[in-house]
Image 1: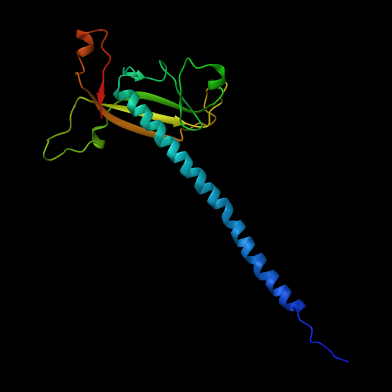
Image 2 (image 1 turned 90 degrees about the vertical axis):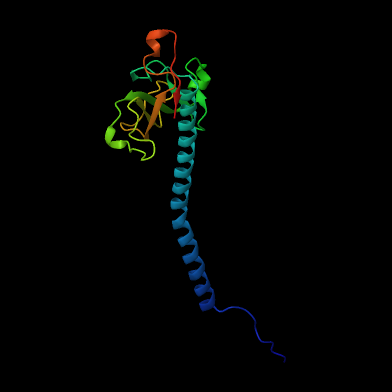
Length: 179
């Protein structure tokens, strides 16, 4: 009788292999939420940058009237989840996609935040400070933010290219700003 040696793995070898594989899988699964959170934060920062750049362009190209006080009461700045501007006269389908709301206002310039350029002299006294608060998410139906504090707040310092008294000379004047 010819006895062939049996080939295969022992139960101990299989258990050790399963223990190693399960440890690796559990470690990878523990990293998954952190990776998803980092991805979501990167996406939010990118969309926030796109929205702030759009607002900057609107201020600079006279698409927004810069008057003392809250700008947001005369024009609403709504954006969808991808950072695309939704105009105030948009249809209901576009308004239902509102996710970000920006509020812009001209505020007092804090001289402590300004630094003098040694070559140019003291900072300009004709600066305007434009504060932009960006909230998300917002209720798509009402447009009101779902949280109490803005997700981000940015202050732009700008100066009118025509001077601060130009509106008294020409009442139809809309100031253009230089950043």
